[in-house]
Length: 185
Image 1: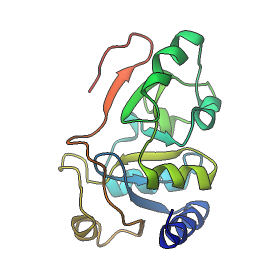
Image 2: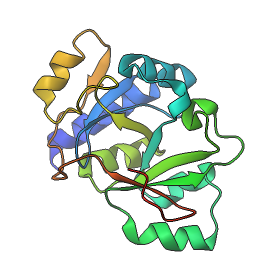
Image 3: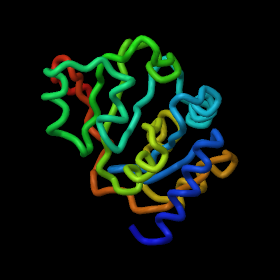
Image 4: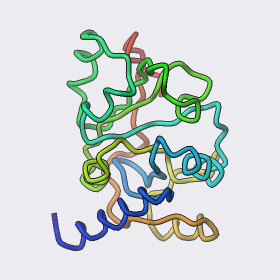
């Protein structure tokens, strides 16, 4: 990883630990993220995005090991999800009972992904934890793929931006139900 990227990641991790919301490139679009266990940070993110808490959020990680504490996993689920990771596939998996409602919303499950995007992956690895990851756009508005548009859209929000190239996916990642294998998005 180039020196400037290490510096960007280090600064972003410092922001995450301080409770900030960050924007960063993912496989298809810029994402908004924060520490999933920091309720104030998650509420700020939901407010900035204008997203109802009931919908729930996605967590991204650098490995399945980072996600395990949040999930109820059995061998069938592990066998279904692991061939798709790291990669642009999000799975909805039953959540542990302790997982906060600000992450699951009205669901008993959690949407999760082990990302392949190098910046998002490094953020999770250096932070040592999964990150909340939702597309960086106000709800009902198109997803953002360029940092210039990100800066304009969130000019009045206190967001730390990790600039970088968005991945090659044409649209946001596919979402599947880990119990049934059914595609949800």
